[in-house]
Image 1 (spheres, helix red, strand yellow):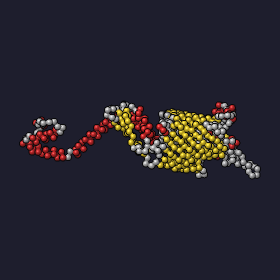
Image 2: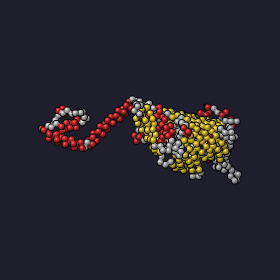
Image 3: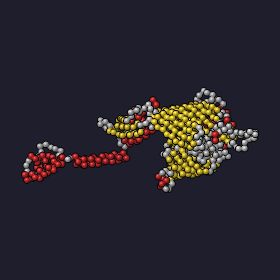
Image 4: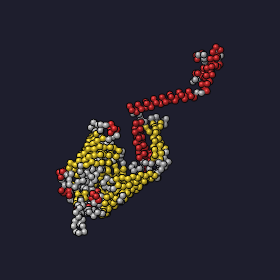
Length: 535
């Protein structure tokens, strides 16, 4: 066979093998003619089927090159920041939804300066778009920016709108002690006008009466505002005969004027009616039976820096709610000021994932207006302690003392004693009405830790030991004159206990044993096993 350096091709070529074959065809070396003929035939066969060889070589090298680039990119993302800006956000897939709605959620990309920030914001934007409940899927991809602008990227937001604008839920629930079992349902119409609007109607029907009926609309970005707008009309009935000898029915309208991560401002306008079908109500309850108008403005500030509300191991949470009622000239309008404060703090202990959770809640309600010192506070707006909720998860003011049942703490007042037809009083004791308080304070300490078995740890099941305390006090109708801090502290009820916590997203299930260290005569609490089910 001729050697390559024996040939002098007329022009350079990228395929030296082909060049060699062409050169051999012009010169005629007889001693190697047969060999070259066989080689030429083999080359022609290879030229006839070049694709399988190329398909076998090129993809493998390209894959290896791509893998190397990806590995290098991952290492770079982990070890150093990668400068990158977003040049443009492209929206695809929305046929009904307005562009401004998606653009407002994707506005977070404008402030990104690194690849890490873009990836983090992508997750946040994906979550926020999914939370609108109008898309079946959301896909966010990154593409290279214009060639003339190095260090930039285009973000492509591709959405798939919900196939059906109609959705609904229905279920049977048992209200903890306050209500009987109910059937509840919700029907939603999604994105009717393309503004992400959600129209819904809901009901809750008890076996003996209609408990709740409401309808409302939610706009995530009303007229381009940075906060959503919620408007809801409601008809609500609550049965408190067992605890306070009255039923409450209210109907009205609520409007969320401001809603963000840390701030909420809601206006409520409602007509309330308190009745006593049993005719056993105490004198204090009978004084408040009838109609009243509620026109109030409620503001809530909330910040939660805990790692988890279901099992906090580190961080803190704070919430404050202020309400002013009486924003109407009607004489039947309830006028009062109400303030709630919650503070939670979790301290990690470093052993068995243990943590010490501390919490305190306080609240006060007081009437205002002419003669406010002698007026009682509205009965439905007072503070009542007890119930089957965990103070660790909830940030709703002073409501719970572990182990005490719903509305289970003093102050109380004897119910009216009815007389029989013969004129003698009935032998049966009608009991007492729990009246609630104008001032309430609760506190707790909770020590949580993992079980040694891995099966429990993998499922988040853990144990806890706790202690709680709380008290109520009347301040209205000149009762504040007899108030003393020493007397109030001595009236605290205390309880301790231990149990097992089972986190079931988004709920916290506790199987506890409660023991009362201090309680008063009419308090509804005793040593017992109990189940707490809260969010």
